[in-house]
Length: 279
Image 1 (cartoon, rainbow, N blue to C red):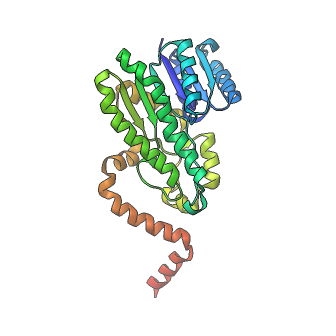
Image 2 (image 1 turned 30 degrees about the vertical axis):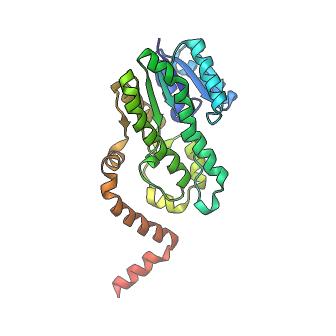
Image 3 (image 1 turned 180 degrees about the horizontal axis):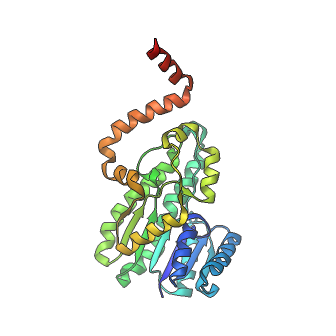
């Protein structure tokens, strides 16, 4: 029976992936900070998929705390056997202008989004390489492909994941271990709703009014990427093209973003431009 370990598995994309693998009969280990949310997640999974509660292990741990996360994953592997698939979904986002974001906000996002992923990978990597099999999926973000106004810390943490995944892929491949990274768009999750409350208007202008993806649709594409052994998993034509041709078109994107931000900073600028053209 496949053993899937998911950090951040109590809600959002992590929970959607847990639902998918529960329906496939996998043994699940869910790791998150809140034990209460984990308990609720297990109840919901059993109700929705009909799986056995005994096949879902819960461990409350903060991925930023390496020793605690290592102990949690060790307990999961002791109970259900070696990890076959690791999905690092735990993450936080705290939008805000750089000058208004203190060092602790940067530290929290880097330690959770980047270091938390590294800690989880380190906990299973040795066992996977010794067995000669295993899959690791790191969840980055569309913000890991291009810088976004008001997301300096978040973008930094998600860009770092891409570099980590690229380098580790080369090391892991000779041992039969697959490493992947995905770049989800805005997704309908509880965290996304909290994020919107503090998203700067300039960021909203740049990112437009694209409807967020349902979490289950994102989960299906991630799981499909794992099954197919894809290194990078993208969502929609825009993010795919950005990943493939971003460096080439970035000067144009920067020009467009600068204009959009200027209009957001000065709402009357557009009206003045229209008046000049009319005269």
